[in-house]
Image 1: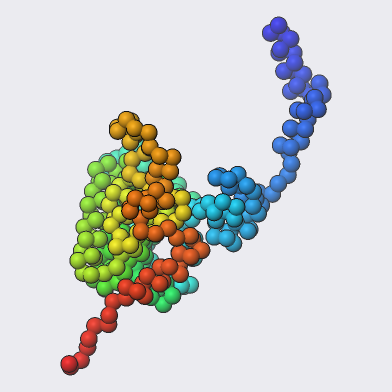
Image 2: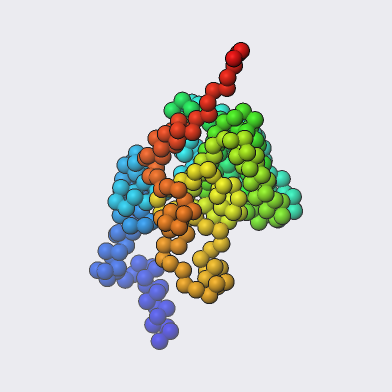
Length: 299
């Protein structure tokens, strides 16, 4: 019996036996030459769209409104006035504080792949003429985990905004703390939260925009401290994962648990804004909360 099986396998790989009709059809389908990058298949609704149309729609599925993840540069391109972004701390890179094996090599590979020094871009920019400090996290760099550099850049950006009386817009997207930096990573939660508190005490506006996914220590710190908290549709927002929570409380969680819509219903998020409307909504909020000009000269 085994000899017969090996004989069939041998014939198949030597091309001595013709393929049956079903197998031949499958093989031809596999060999169909579709140019790479021509089509986008939505991971949610499974519908296919031309990649060019998907890109023009802001990386949003036209069938189900799935909001795909953006790079930090892509987010800046659709949010701030053209040519207005001036980056802070562009050459800051993480060390290896706990000598985690392979951490430096992994960072270097990601720098070459993404063109980023770490998982966040910070700086000043204009949105419809209104000057702001902007923070944009990029999940393509170690899932935008918050290590020492990410926390430091965010803190410095918020402190600059406080000193210069500017509003802060933060686009969050993170898997949480960066395990490769141990306790140093966890300390960034307190540091960023302290910077937000001082910005708030100065009476300045801070808008947090949660994008997919915003989880872990980022959710537990500066992402949840916005004066106004916005989320894109259907994004994942939470601290611990579903299985961890269900195992802890021994209860079944709702299907939409940790979705933006669930968070809006329960008061954690103030509004859900589609990507194509985000720039307009933020500009409107900035104008509504614009600081009065300081009085100069003699009264």
